[in-house]
Structure formats: structure tokens, C-alpha cells
Amino acid sequence: IFVGGGQDFLFKVQPSLDKQNIFAAFREPYLLDKDLGMTASLSFTTGARSRYDFEETAGTLSFDRRFFRKYTVSFSHTRTKLRIFNMYTFVINDIKTTEGNNYINTLAIEVEYDVTESFNRVTGLGHSVHAGSEYAGGLLGGTLDYVKIFGGVSKYFTIYEDEIEQRY
Image (tube, one colour):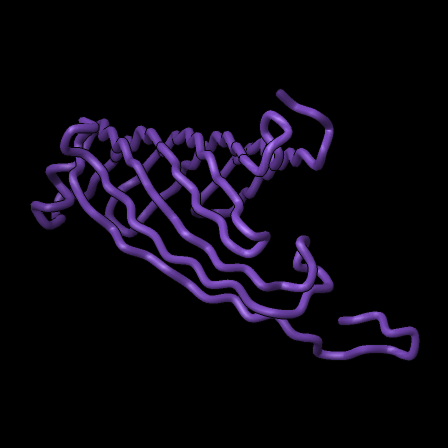
């Protein structure tokens, strides 16, 4: 399944005074030696909001397919357990009803158009555009039901280029 062609493993620990996060992800860009990508990730976050404390544990599995080296379509499933506790006495009812354990199951689809010069985006020029939708709850089960539409644009350009054409 893994042919040694550019797998990535990412592990991040982000401590701070009001929120701590641990994140790990593995990406196989050429699953079964094809233009199919797979990413698996796990995260654990704990922290405090203005009126409550929370712990969130999430796992995501996503698959993507590249077309013509510029287009990518991805599908993902995320399962999240969100525990809300130490809630203040005076909070609005919408927040008060979420105290305890909440389970969120989502399915998402995303389309990206990427014409950056460099895949690692460190020295790249160009831009990328992405849009997608996420569905939670309903037939998937869980505590929350919603539909989210999202998108974004990234533009990359050179700020400074030295005498040996190194870009910054």
C-alpha cells in the first residue's frame, strides 16, 4: 500500500495558558501507486472558554484524488467527542444544553484548484482556491446537526529575491 513516494508524518504539541493541543497526522499521497491520497489524523485539545472548560478528541480519515495536476477532490469523515464541563451558572440555554459529552460525526467534500509553482509552498508562487461542504448529524448520528459551506483563497508571491535568485 505504501510505496515510499512522499509520505508525511506530522506531530504537533501546542501548549499555552488557556488551551493545549496534541495533533498527529499521516499522509500517503500515492495510495496503491495511484493519484489517490489518504490522510489519517488524531487530535486532543483541552482548554477554557469564557464560561466553560472543554476537552475535544477527534479522528479524521480522508481520501483525495488529483486530476490534471491542478485539481483535487477530497472526501473525509471526522468523529469528535466534545466534553463541556465546569460551566458557569449564568450562561445562555443554547450553551447550557451542551454540558457533558457531545458526539459529532461529519462527512465533508472539498474541491481545490492549485496553481502554485512549488508543492511545499515554501518557495512557491501562484495561488490556490478551495470550496466545500460539511454535513454533521442526521443519518450519521451524534449530538449536533448542521451543514457548513466553506471556502478560501491563498496567494503566494515573492517578497524579496537575492543575487542568487533565492526567494524570501
